[in-house]
Each structure stands twice: as C-alpha cells, then as structure tokens.
Image (cartoon, rainbow, N blue to C red; front, side, top):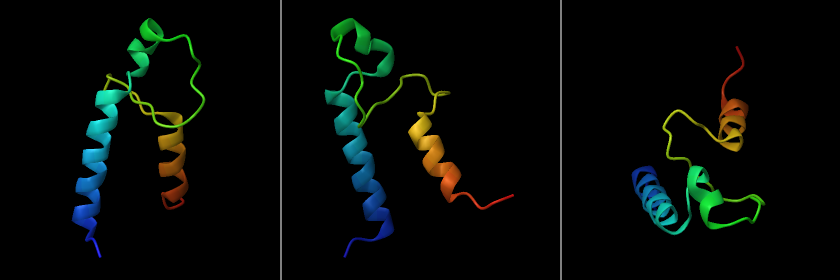
Length: 64
C-alpha cells in the first residue's frame, strides 16, 4: 500500500505530465476554439486558483 508521501509524489508526476500535454488557460484560445467542458485545466499565473479547486478546499476547511 502506498504511503501518503508516495501518493503526493505520484500526484506531482501526474500534474507535470498533464502540464506538458494540455495548454494552459491563458494560451488555450490561441490553439483551439473548443470550449472547456470540464476536467483538468491549469494556469501559468501563480495567483489564479481554479474555482473547482477553491470549492473543494472550502468544503474540507473547518467551519469558522
């Protein structure tokens, strides 16, 4: 069974692979006119968090 550290490493490797094969949102319009239909997406700008990621984090955060 994989440890938590191994799972995080695998997630990082998956993320790196997806960033190689999928255009970032800022450049996507240059290469395709297909609208985003859900699934993986990423942003070059470090200050942008996809709303799905924020919602997921917000649901798991303890209530204030």
